[in-house]
Image 1 (tube, rainbow, N blue to C red):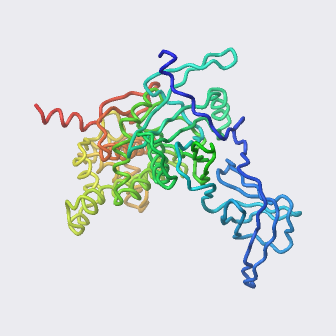
Image 2: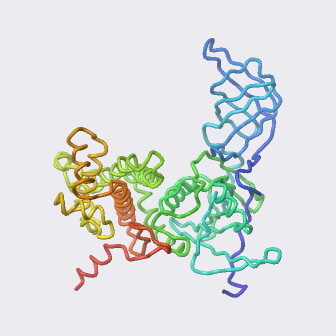
Image 3: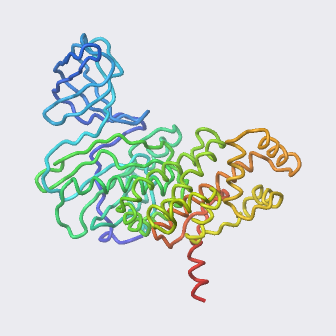
Amino acid sequence: MCNKDSTPDRIKPFYTTQEPDQEILLIEEEATLKQTLEDSDQLVECTGTVRILQKWSPMGLYFEFPDINTHDFNYGEVEIVSNSFTTTGQIYYVLDNHIAGHIKNDIDIGTDHDLQYVTFHIPNYPDLYGGQSYHDKIDTQTVRWSEVVLEAEGFRIALQPIRDYLGLSQVARSSENIAITGVGQISRIDGKPFKKEKIKPLLNGIRIFLSFSFTNWTAPILVVGSNEVTPKSCEIWQNHSVDADSYLNGWLSSNRGHYLSTAFPGFMKLWANENWREPLELAVHWLIETSRRSGGIEAAIAVGQIPLEMLSCLVFVDDGKILESGEFGKLNAANQIQLLLAHCGIPSEPPSQLKSLSKLSKHLKPTTGPKLITNVRNAIIHPNESNRLAMSKWKNQFSIELEKLYWETNQLLKWYITLILLNRMGYSGQYVNRLIPFPIARYEDVPWNNSIEKAKI
């Protein structure tokens, strides 16, 4: 426990949820609703009170005009114009002088004055340990909390759980709903003021970085810029996907949150590279989809190979110019992935922890993990007679349980994606090896560290 003088100031949220899935009223003011009717190109409009709401299931920004003449409006796209903002939306409810719908784009309100700091809110934040514990007294209970600090591009980003994190997060987890349980604050390391346009790319980078690290969609939302004149100089409201699950499934566990501080500068350096920005976001998207297995384990395996092939092409052709496009295209998927693993210092041998894959390897004689996963994936996505007979042989002659084989293939795909991204960030610390589940997260050094040490001997 640290002394009182070294305890960070608690970041005060501007928006809170007293219970999971509690909607938040962001603004209520007079506005004009406009719509061009598709059948006649006629413009209809009406003025009334608009309410902009943050809702959660599904998560997004919504609008409603609770008392407006609905006679001339249809379902479809509309424009909303007020003194504070102009935005577009999609009507999905028209009834009894009440119109409601969802907002289609970002809403940016307030001034463009210099800012001292920016506050954002984090749904289902997983209360990370940042290297030091602090304590709050809430009623009669002493609650431990910690702060994680990220630094890059001259900015400092502090992440904290909210004061009543414990009870709210437990209810959110048990109900599988969403609540604001974390808060963050951005400021310049040198203390100088900055414009809000400077932090928009940073906010998106934070979203992708946290989503990758947690392997759950995690976004900084309900952004508020503050300065010496007013605590709400400007606000940015955006539509983002956020997962209700706050359990960590990626390379990080909550008791080592300070590892984020080590990885973040390298991520932001990669994020600043135009060649990498879209592929990074796509790779994280496919990693999360592979982890969710929302379409079943077979679908997860089918999509899990996509980011590996994409990243291999990016490293060797688009970004690194190591191979010509035609030369790279002659390689099959397994060889493309194997080449990338070797380039990143990641072992391509089938991990011994994955028993079913190791057994299949002995029978089929593929010597690498990439060849195994492509064999399994191709058998799944091309269910022709030959592949059906092959899978029957794996099951009946080799005594391989296909469910276990599929689960291990999916784990290996996620392991490859995670390590490749960490390697490209220049990360050289420890990570959670989730090839097989453990009651307690097992940390180990990234494999390329071993390669570096061997090279020194």
